[in-house]
Image (cartoon, rainbow, N blue to C red):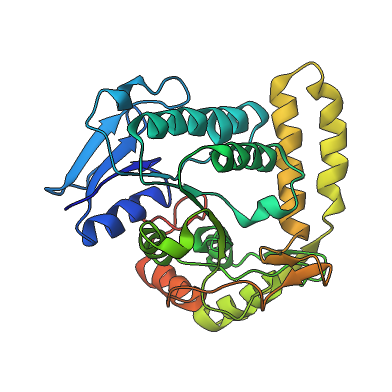
Length: 317
């Protein structure tokens, strides 16, 4: 039997790779795409459906039911309203579809940062995680660490002779970043794994964990040139956020801008590793690893291929 899998958020950063990983494993895949999304992937076992889960789930109920549902939905901005609409509302509509279909598994792509929920998008992620766990469907929640994309944003700056920004000493945080294709493979493998039923799975890429200062040193090796660093105090984000919060009482845009600054402060001060309650610290040893692609290989590909967007992000497609 060839299983049919719905991938929600298929046009996103990880979603497309998940679609490709499933097709490689001979699944029949239904890719849910945003209205107007650009999509060039074609395959005999791929079906595309267009619609906004932030508005309605009816367009999914009009198609043939699937055996599995994978949610790669994620707020693109992290703004207050956007976080609720995507992280909770859209996923809740997707869960309603999965319940009506009676799927064999609902797999949710979450994030490791929800271990310390201070931000709106983190709280909305956890709110849906709780709703999923309370449902009568078998579920799997995957919480990846950092993505290569998030650690590649300063490459263009360095190529222009500008310094690499770090916060504090550059060693306040650490992570085990994972390649998008390695994460997609991990997701596909867990879909039918009995050990992943009703389980929360943190996952990172090949270690060791790396700090922002370590990233600068690695880029210096790859670029074969000295890389200067410039330190910024993370507290600046909180000071600016406090000021904007006053205006946020009247203006939603200011409220979102204040939240973006709080997000920046969080990532400048919190590691993307598994948190150990026993040790009261993030643990590199407790953070599982998967895949084989390293951050060094990613940097080499970006620099060699010149695939850096105007924003300095790794352009995958």
